[in-house]
Image (tube, rainbow, N blue to C red):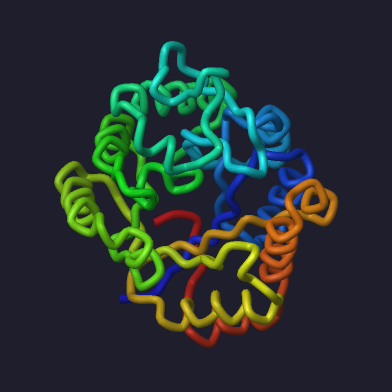
Length: 277
């Protein structure tokens, strides 16, 4: 079986300059997919850029904000288990994961999906901002997401194989992961084989060569089937508005996509870039 790779730029909608950079990457063929956060402040700007370019995006389900962008609010009314006293989604993904009621998660996913469809987009898949649907913080909501995808005819970014990094992060939830993969197969929800990314947080990513080596090493070990490389590219203008380590890492991820060594590795390994799994 051949090795295929979806190259996905996450976080469309978080910042207008990030939107512009990601749409340019898609036009240039340097990424093959992107994900949009409907609750983010530049989501409408992202839709305008996508439609002008004749492009589409997946739904990047947000149940938390992330420390870079505090204050996002859910789109569905009455999803009280997802918000704090201020009505905003929590900054910490673990807080969101542990207190979210599955019914509220389903309602919010439906509201975010409908927002995209009402804007004229046709998202073919969903995934999870900050990993809150996967159980990375101790409680898996993957079954809820699988059922939602089956109902709405979507695919789901849940890797069939956790791999060493995700396996360590979710070591207490391997049973839940296996169950969610089996449930997806039973319900006809398509999944990628593995996920590839620069997994180390910004504060531990000390140089561009380190980040590149981390990603290229994973690409060389890619299994047969269709997998996904997740990047979070940002231009210098947007990176400057983020915490220093996070902004630096996003700049390096943008650099990676234009690096000849990255593209040589794809060619030498016989990896075909595709838009979907």
